[in-house]
Image 1 (cartoon, rainbow, N blue to C red):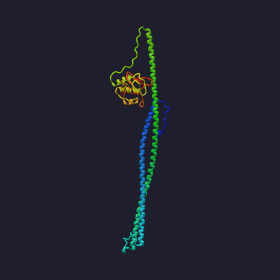
Image 2: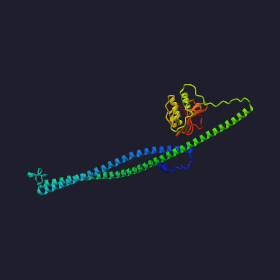
Image 3: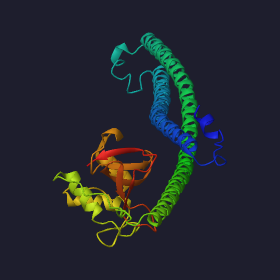
Image 4: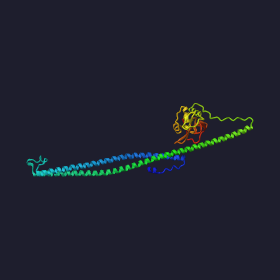
Length: 365
């Protein structure tokens, strides 16, 4: 099963950047991570089995060695006993008791040929009985040694099989690790491409909105001009005013008013300095710091360190995020009335705008 997952080609490079590709790559990365975990568990089991098999082979080899040595000792003892008894019997028969072994039994008048013959027969009988016992023991030890040899061969074959399985599992794990690195690289590229596409779509929407607003203003100016020409006392047109400051002493109101105090400050990537420059998360971090709340410098980090709220339950000071769960690339601060204050992108200043479309979620520090 693991090999099938490794050798299946991952045809994703030709897919267009978008949510479908990101989702597919995320699912593939999760699948590979699960496969690596399962492979590591298998490696642990195989490693333990391999060590046990090696210990079993070593134990059996020692038992075979001990049985072989025992047989050798028994054979040596039998040879020594056989030689000694025969030598004593021969000496007793030929010399009539010259051997030290018979000197005690055969002395004085009791040293007779009949008794010598009886002793020789007894010695021969003892020798036959000893040889029979030794032969039985030799046979039993030989059977044990043969059984141990067969068991050792089986254990050795099992050890080789486990060793082969262990090497195969290690190879599979290495391939899975390599594929995981590749998939994560593709995922990062796909997410970046998707976010660039979203940013481009948002910029185009803003441009269209700005063009529509400019056209409306131009039309309004033309109407005012025509009205002034036809009226002796024209009615003055009030100048547009910026979004009013948020009232109250809540932390959200303090953060909003702090952020709005920086309107006109240029966008600076990585910036978080009042009057000098902000990026999106630098502005929200600095503004909430004025209300005594510490936030990280990064949209993704800010989203996961604050309480999440519904977009239908927004309050002044709440943060609205854009992107997905893997990467959040933009954050704005809600003012109220469908408006936000934000540091949008390079070339713009901190400004109030309508809530950008396509929000991922919102949170309240």
